[in-house]
Image (cartoon, rainbow, N blue to C red; front, side, top):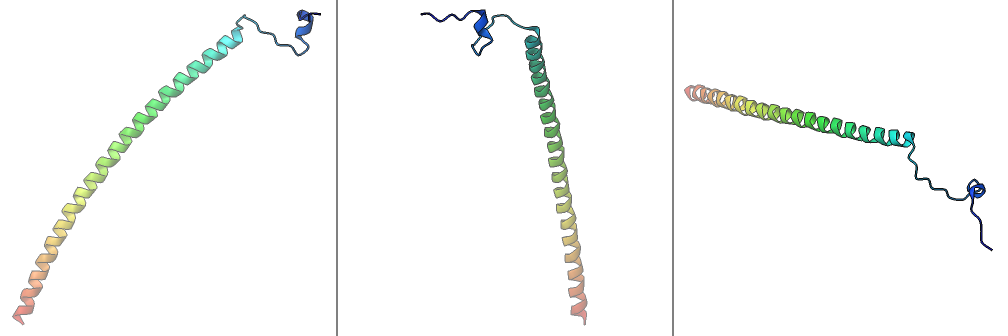
Length: 93
């Protein structure tokens, strides 16, 4: 006895494969692909913006370090000058 799997058996739990391509499947796949490309493009732009912001912050920190080095050098020079003057005043007494 062979088992018949005709059209009346399809609805009762059997597998059915169709070679047709539905328009909704095509449109949804296309929408997913377009969304993926859009997401990747936005991601690249965000990475570029963050890279530029990082470079600007690094430059700002470097300028601040140079300014601090210069300012502390000037303060050290002034303190040495004050110390020398105090030593001269102390030697006079």
